[in-house]
Image 1 (cartoon, rainbow, N blue to C red):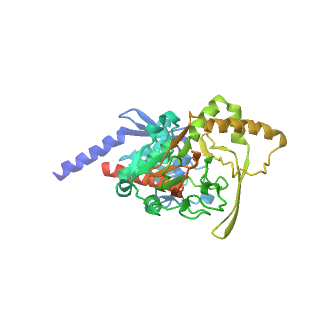
Image 2 (spheres, one colour; image 1 turned 30 degrees about the vertical axis):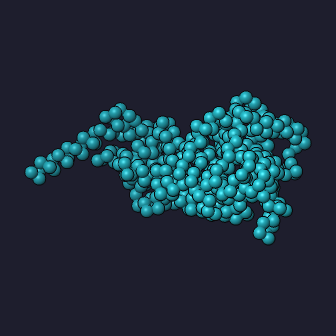
Image 3 (cartoon, one colour; image 1 turned 60 degrees about the vertical axis):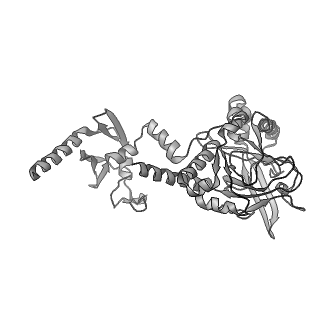
Length: 402
């Protein structure tokens, strides 16, 4: 009986061996899945750089520990073979590397797989919306469900990442409730305005947000190089009369349409650095914040990553050549008109106990004027921590399914 089982194991391993074949093609190692006729190619310099042995990779910290200074960037494979669902590579320095087939498939260089990883692991793909779509895309979540249920927490964060805005309901009207919500994700981003800040009319204020008049569209803290990513506003007291509506305009939709219909204006706004400043005193401390960045900031792929937009914080110093000033104002006029166009701009009146959460890098926001008492508390989180929490929650969900 023992001999029969041993024979079966050897036969199974042999079948695995022939199900996968490997060869060197140019500067790549090719691994072929013969059952589905699919090939994966890996540059051998990349494979050596990602060796998973204990000399090269620290498993507990999931970190590469190869010394880059002494790494042989001209190394070549001498022998390759597939053994029991593992690729074995003997290198020109006699080092041995083993890669499981599952690890190789999870790191394959196919465009389809990379697209999946970028949109499902790295970051969800943001989707633009216009005013007529707002009621559809504004997802609502119960506060207690967000605190207690992992699936609801993930759904809220995903909605926030994709649409740039989400609403949490029934949070009550207790001050500092936002701290519990932030701690559910990571922690509050501290700024010169503290952890939690109040938004209500204050006599003698140096901040225009603390007036009862209209607050024009803006993004918060454009004068920060590391501008807070997520803004949360908790409505504790809503003005009893009309007014006090929050205003939002999706900068992603505006910039998408601007780039397509007025590419020259878009280019000017994306390439012209603007000075953003804030000179203020808060809690007996003085601050002089200053940062230079275009109104529209892109990544190397041309994707929108940040909008800087605040009339009060746009400094009078404009350090660009004189002949670029007028063209910039013409392009800026186009952007301002588009952001305020009813096609994009929406109004939403919060109820007491609502928490409006939105992307401060993407959505210029404002407020209608109001009479009487109105009191909101606000705070920030960084997108780095939001994305981190999303990945952890997705990993837990996937492990529970397997």
